Length: 133
Image (cartoon, rainbow, N blue to C red):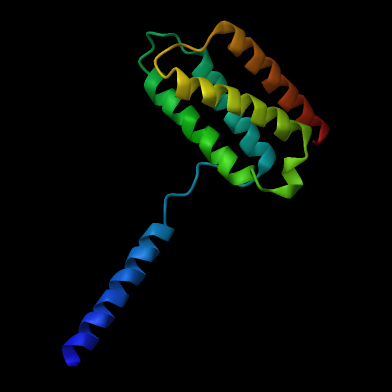
């Protein structure tokens, strides 16, 4: 009986520690300020898009861009105060386009047509943010 209680308590302790560690995952790279985060993501994505094919930083910047896309989507997707803004809907369109390219064609460069469209959308996002939306 004593041994059964010991194992029961040990298992409970292990489960508490495991759940605690899983819940303490790494925080995202964003601050929580929508305007500031959006501009930071736009800046990172522009840097990733401007890279040449032979750039030594290409893999690292593309990985950072993917991480920013994921962090932004995870943080702001269900925030009602943000989801109706023009800047958010345009930003989501741009993020989905770039994320789609990265997942479908990971080894191919981003086509110029897509780069042009993304740059236009980034400008729209910045303009909307300046107007307050």
